[in-house]
Picture 1: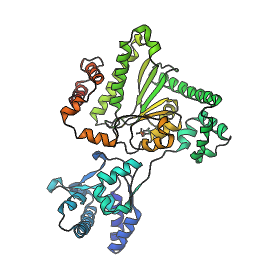
Picture 2: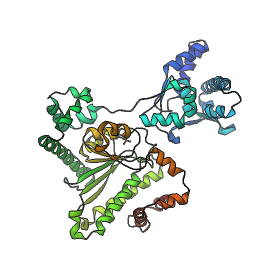
Picture 3: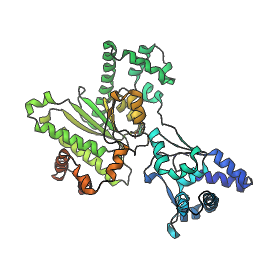
Picture 4: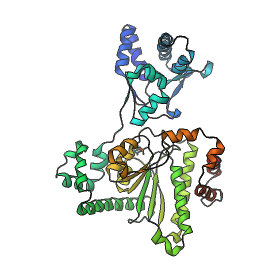
Length: 436
Ligand SMILES: *Cc1c(COP(=O)(O)O)cnc(C)c1O
């Protein structure tokens, strides 16, 4: 079961086996729990679904009866295991609330009905055992395992980057066996300091950047230079992924350029094109606000002749897998800066690293395993780790406010002063994070 969305399937199989096939209950339950496994994809409460008991009763009354029944048996088991411990029953129950507010905790149904439960990166699976599903882990330690996400090298390297694929094949032995055995690509380390190889790699990267440059010109009418660093952040727009922090940094960089006398700017700053793309869920106002802010910063920065194209900001329209195949191979640097503990795995980190982009990332999700694999010297590790984040969460509002850096105050001020036109909602959002 891929997240909690299809969990009703387990109850439906139980119904089929009992009501249609007339199996005895124990056999039916045996088949159900040996059929299903549950993959959790996020620790954010928004994805741990709670379905209203009233709704299920109206639409699927038999399924609701069966959930009550399996929960009843489960609660009896908990009673035997933890006699007199009412709190355990409250935490582990598939049902919460009373009366019209009664809800089914679909994740609890999923765990009880499954033979295995997994997270999607080592750190995420550990967090499931330590906090989100701690009491279930204590009860069913044998059920919990890790299965780190992956992406297919066929699409995300071979198909989207033929230039790099050809270079890999000719460098490690002129055939394409590595496409189904990525371990083979390790052999390329031997060429990492070979000047000829490096020149070829840079030529491939340049071709990819030219394709993205043409794509941006054609689809959005914006000119970006080839000789700039392409700094890319493409993923769904969300607070935990921190596109807002990225754009606040971009404002800071713009202010630093402006503070430098115009004649010295070209010598001091590496030209950078910041490309941010992704969709926001339709009802997610704050995320829509971030998109507005990114576009506003682009409007101002891209039209300021005094900064000599040392900085460009593009919000890429309609981010999807098709244009991801053009965007990702062109990146020099890619951003994976989620608040530690919140990005279950991430998969674009894998796509970027396969295409020879450097990663700036927090110690979160699969970034942790990527850092182990490529070596910490080959990754820009950024920001607080999970333990530090937990310490910050424990601070008072005042203590947290005291930690806001002077440079950040300056950036917030540009937003209050309408330097980048945004609506009042975004300003009030910024006001809320600014005041701790
Ligand atoms: C890979 C991919 C994602 C996942 O990106 P993350 O940075 O891991 O969140 C999202 N959308 C599209 C179109 C992708 O190709």
